[in-house]
Length: 322
Image 1: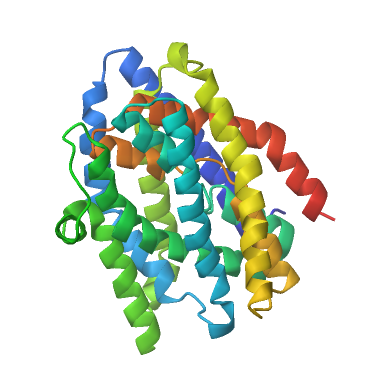
Image 2 (image 1 turned 45 degrees about the vertical axis):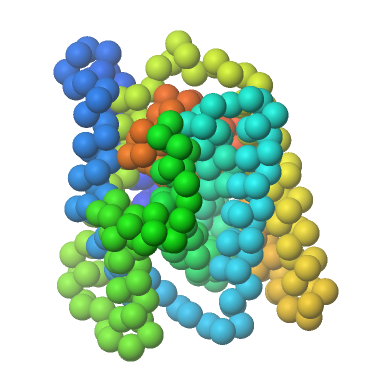
């Protein structure tokens, strides 16, 4: 009989496929307008993600010796963002397109729907624990830094400033960060999480609902006839995500060794696997909420994910599945 995590993964794949198809059919049949996607994202960000962000962090195992895992997540995300900016400028993208491309380069699907689950399958529960710590660092970085930064890629020409960051931190779109920080505070304070959370499978239910909403929007904004457009961007992004990102991960691991930080084999495997993950779903969320190029974001997400499953995942299984 499949293990509980495997069952969860299968359920998540079903939720992703069905909700995406429903969204696509709903737009094609005229049942739901594409413009509704922004409202769906906003409701999900306000009503679902804050609690879904708080509850897992509340019981996350935190150890001082594991500090390099979240540190590398931050370093790699910023490194890939810079690479994305440079490559995007070579493609002569306008600001909304540059924002989407650079965010696609920087942010990866490292959660349980992709990177986290692969870590679990290939490395067991301890690998999954490291993956969760990695994801936690990304969550803080995303909401505290990249959400405010997204406004600078709009056509309004907004400049990044401490005032802009502060204003966005208190924006309802960043409530997930507050949820994460509350969960961390409860964790450090030693407050036990209520048993009803596990008994009622609240986290699982929230993840399913929020995932269904997000992928419904993916289907709603997916234009199959235009998905192959900008082929050069898809190729450039694949090179960044699947070649440059792992190379940068190895570089940061080497830097850690030079300064005397010991990284055990399993941690190293998790860091490398996460560095190869495809584009994060949250890139489409940011594009939608900040009015960047949503159709480009959807195309980047879909094409890059397909390329990962077809070309990269078999290599990971061969390398770490023994």
